[in-house]
Length: 344
Image 1: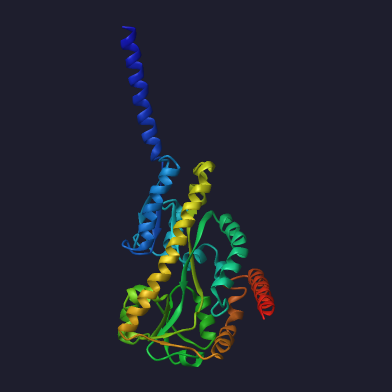
Image 2: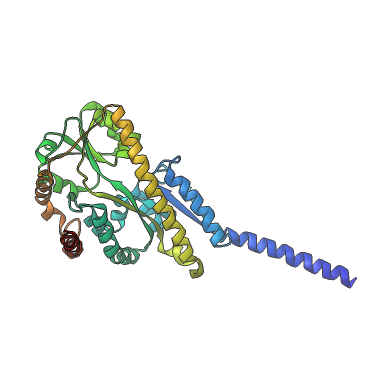
């Protein structure tokens, strides 16, 4: 009888253990929203990330993905994270700016001149930006680069005066930035990306700025077959969670979770660069012309951009963060100039 009781106790304890740990394994499901399509490299990597986080946390953390704007646009997703109906999102720069408008300072047109300069500035400024975002109840797990923006237009664009003859599609919902572009002399037409093709077909707009991958995937280049070779600004996004959700995760897992997420972002960026090259080649086969700007063009683009700077400083972003950006850019360029002098 004692043996039977011992076996019964063992069975009950084992059963309770299975129930407890199985329930605990899925105790925290993080709902992640994104505007990127369901069948995209980002969503594929997010699925893999969910598996890896499950392994790291012994099943204590799981991810559920809401792709293709199912959770709304990025402003909607910021609101839903605040409400608690989403746990986080993969944001572009627009989503990051919805949380912390000063982040737009990294997207001033024609300001950052190279990948290396952008990397340096991001390394220096990201700790400060992350702390400010945390004050608003969000946690930036990783930053993710996604290439650069370029102008696509119906007719060739080499100088600012060329673009001023076009009707430029401009994302709705950013009145101060729209005013800055107008003050720089451009004819901007507020428009949603989902309506871009219709706007191009109707002639409402005849130019836009996007990463080449998006210009190719949306087939927008067919109606604006001229790409200006000059890079406008880097496209930066990130994986952002609700700080409340992040605090629920045991600290012992967090370092590894961030590390695998960063590896995911790095791999995606490499893949993005390769896919972008392929996309440009395919667009060229289908009529795209890449117009190389003359050596004097950059300064003219910068001068045009500066005309709208007073609208941005103090309204879109603070003077303090602008001064911070200027300091780090000057540091980088000074070091770079010194290296060039030594190399000579």
